[in-house]
Length: 614
Image (cartoon, rainbow, N blue to C red; front, side, top):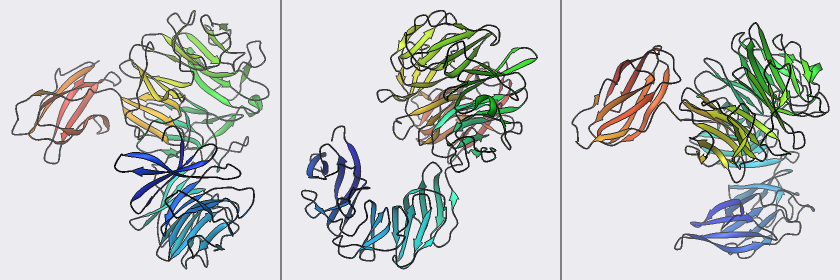
């Protein structure tokens, strides 16, 4: 098909069809099984050039719907009886927008901007079937029951094929899709995620592990938790991202128009590990929690006024005087760097002597503090050697006009910065910079236990996550594990051998990146039994080798646990061929102590002990 926007796909009589947006007209494609390729079947000519919303097959017809029209009853639903070669406008009687179609009880139903419509003659004529004051975007039919998903009013149900309707729960949600599976109704909603309910009773439960499928802007860490700042608020995981708790529900007040369903958009998160305080940067203020997110207070509302708090950072450089830095990136005034020396209760403002020194990131390295910011004309990297009292601009080697989005100190001590002109690196604390990558859409960096550097990106040319194994000199795509390559990754962080990525509309993803190498088969002799050998060396620092033998090809897991039984690392979790294998465990990010490793299959399980000594 090439680079086109496919809006709908359906199967008719065993043949696959796709509808796509193309200028100056929309086209329908048919898949040829013999050539394994797509061919143009026909085109749809409309007056107003709106985008196709969905495609559906019913009663030997193909249907294509449009979500809006200038004139009600025209060009919102088209029908084809010849596999898409020619099309007939069958919009008469429909309102000015059709989202989806479904069928049941010898009738065709349409989800429209003014309720549900029904046709008993394959779309030739239509009558309203209720909910005429609702914007219905999805339909699912089971027997005599119709389920309708609305935009902002939840789900409705009719048990008499549309003659009457009752609300079926999750009233405040936009329900974009509905599906029935194994006697359960599944509802896909905007920002909140996936819900599930029995078909015959209103009993919805959220089933996406607690974190919403939304943009995740930032991460922070405590000793035992990962904290994510997202479009819908702040979320905390205490089990390495397996599940998340919404800790933003208790945010007090609404400071601007960026609240959604009582939650707030969090741009950055910082943790004071000495005083056990979590800070969340939002619109017009910083939120502060002293009880691990259970309750929150507003701080700085008068100082910050309107605009985003884009970045938060904690400085322990001056003994006895902790400093909290808050960078403001938008708003009419007070744009720049705000500092607090009393745990965020009061704030002082700095603008470096220029009008709009937008601050987008703060990085602390040794006894130096760096800020990144600007929007083109005021782009600058600034450095302070006195804990933020005075600042020096260090732009040598950077473009004349740029925006600096992120800063990161690598394991070798070099600093990299992400700008809209690409990624630059400094080996002398910012005295000079060199260009190392032309990607101008990097949103964040993280380093793993091996010193590899990861970058999150939103560029069409550089999609997803990238990794550098040579401290930024070269970059390779690192998107294995995603179901598909994401368009926008807003943030990335590393903890205990895992990389976490905040993906636009898809929530948080994680994958293991170190603490192990792939299991290597070191013997071709076919053994007759399972064997888990003692690791060597033991004790070890920081890495050790674990050898195991399996008598036949099968699924094997090899995991490491701490002395409390908490899972630390997964070394192997896949199908392994018969033979003797060896895997390396890298504990560079762990503390001294006793650890256990467990080999398990369907037929075998054994645990051994090992000791890490720093």
